[in-house]
Image (tube, rainbow, N blue to C red):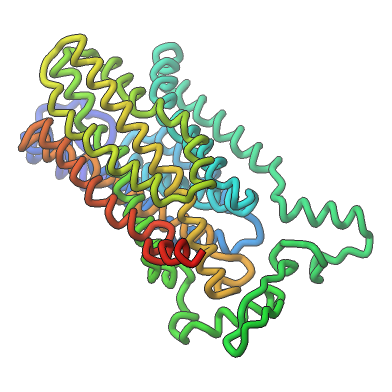
Length: 461
């Protein structure tokens, strides 16, 4: 550190009081471009850490006996990262803290969504994920608002005290929670003293107890096999090199999953593209203050209250047409952004209406996307019973989902910011609309399975 300080002058620690020695490359290091680059790199580090770690963390989460441990570990890691950001006084401390925050968020997200998928009936998963969508957007909206209020009233450390309190409450809830699989073992043990959780029980639908019927290759009769047997059967259906790979790598051969990941990435672009351009646009066009430029995001997030309804529709009608409709409906609203050009009440109302409409379109994409990930694993299990073993691959596919979303979050602000800077606000809107239109085609064709197969089923039915 001493060598760096001597070489670069006013460097990584607190500001030096000795201004007699000119720092190396002073003009460049204090330029607007370099400052923006440093801040952008911090956000980039967060997104890369999250996207690079989610698939691996998902694999580890699927190997554990319970979802509790990865959730608790992720929250403890989050607390450590928050402490680093609170106490840090140098750039490298902030970079490490942001990287740890990304990894902890990846672990909590991956294991949390897998926990929900494991403990909710498949016919109700979409509606439950709709509530998760509401919570996501509520946290995104209320976090900066509450942080700003607490900072004004209590100062710098009060904001982190609030964050630590929320993390502590979250850890407490994780400790109180009992997974259904564990609860059934306790209940069965109380009702029948002869119950042995290691032996198959009639009428149970858990892991080793569940029995699945499938057609043999030699005849059309239905044979019933325990899942423990099916794990061997499913693994034998793969080649030697496939058996050596983690399940999430093998899952990437699914067109259905790849399209779901594409939708997740574009969804990340849609949710983050306004971050870099919208606050500056309303400040320059309408003369709004920094508070008003932050509140404008309410128009995008408030439509997420319809998440449970969209989830209910997803459970009833499937993901394909809802998600494709969400992408297609966003196209004209993005295109109409070019009509917002000057300061007036009508223009402000128009912008808020367009942003709310885009937010509603995003709501019709998020919940079906979450549900599609779990359904993809179920489809593979039906095609190759026991292929993922007793512990499944739910956390791994949600890890891939989070990775794709993180990649979209990286490119969203860059994509929108560069286009607005070089071609204007209207061109940015049309570009995002074109991206949504292009994404709607594979979503319509492959989400929920190849659409041609669905038509064949309808004809046969």
